[in-house]
Image (cartoon, rainbow, N blue to C red; front, side):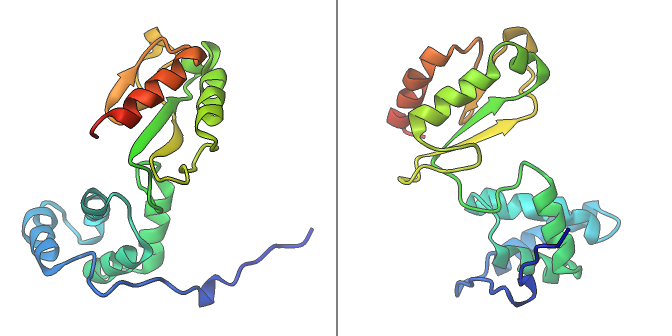
Length: 178
């Protein structure tokens, strides 16, 4: 078996002129977040959350800035950010459709729900529509096992979802002012 390699050592990170960790953001993190942790490294997750909350996702430039701010390696930041599902490492759509893939939802029709969303939006799991309106993801559990299958569109939980209801739910989200 041969290994497929990629030339990541020479990968270029797109940079914008203004930093993602502005002086104000650094001051906030330094005075409000860092004191709660024994080491700077322990504050990595809150720093990632701060950047994502501010920008909607975590660009590579921001990960490099976080690494420098916390005096840790960029690899530690990237490994952590890519490990957790809650972090977005590429821009997401205006609306996020999150289909629960827990065992209860799977038994109650989750695959059909995911397929209906795929078909209606014309994208696969992990993708965003060309117009930037919708991103489709699957989550491990939404905590609605008794009303499976469930999905979350933005902040609204939908329970006992039928594949035929997907178009209406998505169209309602599209017309909302989210």
